[in-house]
Length: 278
Image 1 (cartoon, rainbow, N blue to C red):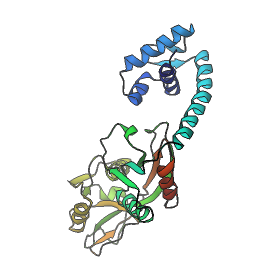
Image 2 (image 1 turned 90 degrees about the vertical axis):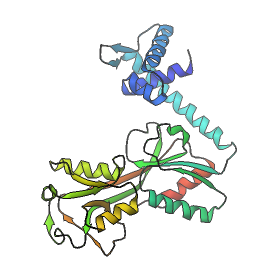
Image 3 (image 1 turned 180 degrees about the vertical axis):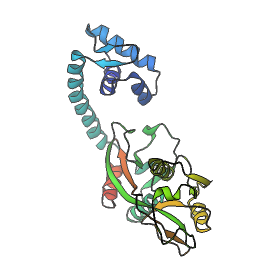
Image 4 (image 1 turned 120 degrees about the horizontal axis):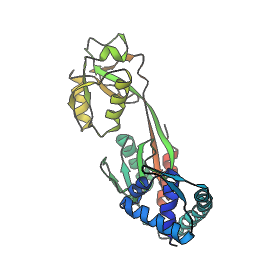
């Protein structure tokens, strides 16, 4: 009986899925399934009831899962404590997938107080190996299973247009904007996803005429009247743009800081971020 076998079983038991365990550990699903089969053979009992399309945890499997929940919690806690006593490199590796400008501001402020701390900050929506990072900043999601997290930002979103738009000064609904042009950030960004989600709830897909990954270009397109854009309410308003009054647009961007181990410099920076939550 190996520790990895127990890990594979435990993760599979939580989701009742070998496929999700394989995604987490980045191994073939067949490897997870075979490992659990070996564990069952060694124990002399089945832990899952299997059908053609799914696995279901049985009573013996539930008993083992409950025991492992306690064991792994103690093990992970001990590893974290031991890591606390290790050498602190003074470096923080961050994957930032939301509120990049605000996070950048916080890093600048923190380094003024702690000039010796080094940051390696990556703005990447395609990254898949999360183990490379000490901290991940992203919208609230369940994709970072096993990570500790706390809410960092809770920001109201608004729709903005050029100041001379005929839409200004009117009380609107999202459906009123069905045939209007929109400007959006890149398809992988949270801003884009929030816009798409809101419009689809209103029964249409927005007519996106321009996509811009660069924030300054995105703002210029809105100001020039190219289309309606989605922005954070807290962003400073430019003279050439105005917020629209859209009665059924009530979207928020909820962003969390995710981490697995918090000690030394990483813990200090996380504590600093907790004082900056919005």
